[in-house]
Image (cartoon, rainbow, N blue to C red):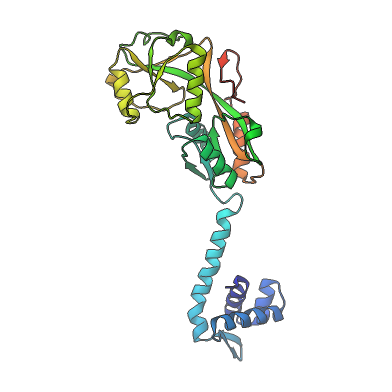
Amino acid sequence: MDLDAVRAFVAVADAGRFREAAAELSVTQQAVSKRVAALERHLGVRLFARTARGSAPTIDGQAFLPHARELLRAAERAAASVRPGRRALRVDVIGRRLAPADLLRDFHRAHPGYELDVVTLFDAEAAVDAVRTGTIDASFRAVAVPPRRLPAGVRASRVYDEPIQLLTGPGHDLAAERAVPPGRLAGHRLWMPGLVAGTEWAAYYDELAAAFGLTIEVTGPDFGIEPLLDTIAGSPTLATLVGERTRFAWPADHGLRRVPLRGPTPVYPHSLVLRGDNPHPALAALRRYLADAPYGHGAAGTWTPRWAG
């Protein structure tokens, strides 16, 4: 159905005259007449009757009028849903407890006027493809491929290096340390059952283990964060690795310890992946915010994988 014809019909119904409707729509009276006539042919009914005062909706026109108004409102809602600045910015954050979600929360607190739609995709390949196709506007990822291998139009910029920490129970040998060098973890049992081969986070920890002679165990089913923390809390030998800004909550009697790694400090390289031609104003604001915020990357005394851009 021609929305211009529907709009002309509503304008005539409201004004009562074709001439006034034409002025309201900034078109000629002849154009309004042609649009209404075309709509009548499409519907197979007369919509207006001529009166001494102008034009009034027929019984069919009165029946159609509320639906015509709803059609125009629906069209406006549809256009607004994709209009730059009106549609929510859709961003992938890997996991809602992890650093990218924290960065996005910081951005939203600083810019509450922008609407956000936060999603979690499985891995970098899925996220990059979603950015390429426009399913999402941006993704926070560790990009384990050279920029030249990203799809055409997709770019990645490193926005935050997140320090990695050791998480232990109170009875672990390293629980009381203020900080330890990553090489000192060689020989200790590091348990990370959530690592999935082929993902960017598995690639990161594989290279971390190779660089410092570590053994990371991935055996056993992954029952989630809470069972992992329960096990670590009660073990004098098991520990795991977590990001500095990863948000965990555990019972007070667990006594878990976060131990910084220094000398060097391994950091996880988060990049913002987006299409260069995306005009969404909230995306531009997010990029400015990340550039100005004190997150940064490439600090002295840190370690990143060789593939980190």
